[in-house]
Image (cartoon, rainbow, N blue to C red; front, side, top):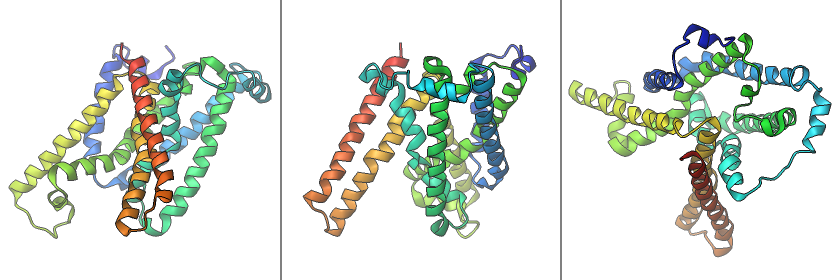
Length: 309
């Protein structure tokens, strides 16, 4: 086989690799100083750009090898609408939300910035705009290359040669080391909810608050257990299906909630507290929130229906 990983470990099945990955991610998820991931994140960005370039070159010159303009003209011949509501919500809407509704990255971005108060708005606006353009253009070009045969992860449309295998390894390294950064906000919310915000922050005070060794050990073990449960939940979600299924489910349920339900709820709550609410102001917020509830319910239902036998 031309697959580097299979040639090194030919008898390791997919489930074993998933267990090894979960075991590797778990201790990384316990780390609270995310400056150590700066180098690997940069490596991941390089790997992603390499993946985009590899896919485009392969599509233009190898398979289908018809050139970029011929491929783009083929887009007009493809169907632009799903065959049913089930296909729309169970097959794609959640993935679109996963790519474009990036609210879930807000806290990890803030945590990783030295001066978030001044730099956050400009950095996020620029980054999101670039990512939107890249996602849309890359998706259209790949769809023009492979049409109905486009895979959930488009790299699977390429032949599995040694260079592609090395590239996939780099992408896995990026995901492995950036997972804890994205995971950190959810973990912190769970810890504060279960342990209480005051107790949970005792170990983060750099000695300002003194606690006994017994309490410190108990708190560390509690945090470790909560992290283990969260990582285990992620492992369980990975058993539902391929990358597209998980991305669609997570995107529809989590990102859909963060993008369409929570913001209007916060807006209505704050306006009522300040006494500035009115029916006219709340109607658009209720409309967005209702749309979010419908979308989240539909994506979750149809995705689980398709993935569970």
